[in-house]
Length: 616
Image (cartoon, rainbow, N blue to C red; front, side, top):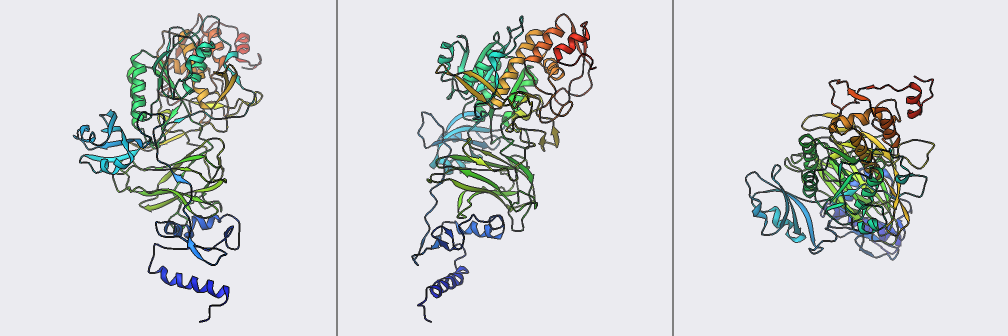
């Protein structure tokens, strides 16, 4: 056979490769030109990525050599992508950077001392048999093989619910209309966030009092800002702070420490992406127990996840891959643009019971241009596994990386899938197939927690929800199905606070909303110190400024809790009595019903409530 022509040589090589494909099923190849796939410089189509071609990609990027054809007419291995799945490490720690935090679940009656040979136990939760440990990467396999160890799960770092926003018109806590006679005096408020490393500067500037009680300073500065927001709203309240820590058990200890100090209100802006999405996990269960036992008000940021969330039933595209559009579009995946040097974390869960999943799903990130697998999470779920897969990817190339998020069902039944994507504002998450609803998870979804969303502060003439603010309702499947009404209230999505350099700075996100509401809770409690936490919560339900659909809705909750709320309470409730008509429905699950026993002219009520005097 004459192989002189260029085209013939190429066809001969392709034929040989096709013959050998049956012998070497783990090796495959693609034909490239200098700028990508031969014949086209465009991205791979959705049908290629989510159809049978994507099944081939799973084999294509195994440990076997990957061949490509270039214009040099020489077959050569394709270099591995320079992006990496970076290991989760504990930042700013005394241990080496090779250590990470992991959750180890032990079988009943196993002594946690079994772990001391290859890991350092940091926290222990006896009820669940779970340890939070510090362990070297190379020791993970050893730990998982220890007798008595049920499972090992590397921890995902907590999410602080702050966002970066452009300068716009915004709420300023300094302009808060404070009541003349109520300052929150006599109420203790505990804050949990990342850290208060710059609190001395805030005190020096007069933004915070000198007597803030720091139980654990942590790492970071968001805690300082949250303390300032609370102090500006409720300047007479006594303030406490405890860092969230780097694992969920440490967070629970932070809650306990604040309770031990007598805090009546606790506020946090922390999310744990490795908490269950479809049931109450370690944190949610602990927070719920504390609220019930201690009678506190617990205020938590709803999350900034409306624009980076997906939820839906698995929809097979015909080859075992999930179609995020459920067959309604040619855009079948979730797409992300990741600039050079930026990191992205993608978390997948499905509605199996935690620690007993027998339906096996896998999570992948693919390069849209080349089809390369950039990252993958393929744990085995065979009856005792956790329905959780996550990947962390860093784009180390010099150009922007266009990425596809893909999910494959390895085995089992169709389940409801839920995906969250975490990255900073420079990473673009395309809106295709995203779902705003049901984007609250973890302890903010606990019925007794006051879950706070964010009102868009960019346009004072339009009172809308911030585009990023997480929405309800929340679907819970275990121990039995329930649809929880979240969120509970809305607060200002942007506040202006003092910067440590003496310049005012912008603070935005549900991280700003939650402390604003917590401060107002303190003011209301100082107005009615004789009432318990449930009654204070019901007062907020009855006096919040209704937004969105009339009455309660899962976007704004009962409405916006703001300075008008306190002004209304001070003018109408002082010297009057407030009674609750019990409806038989928990205030956590439905709007409180109240009768105001007051002797105030209708005109004054309308003035305070900003209603026309003729409207009844």
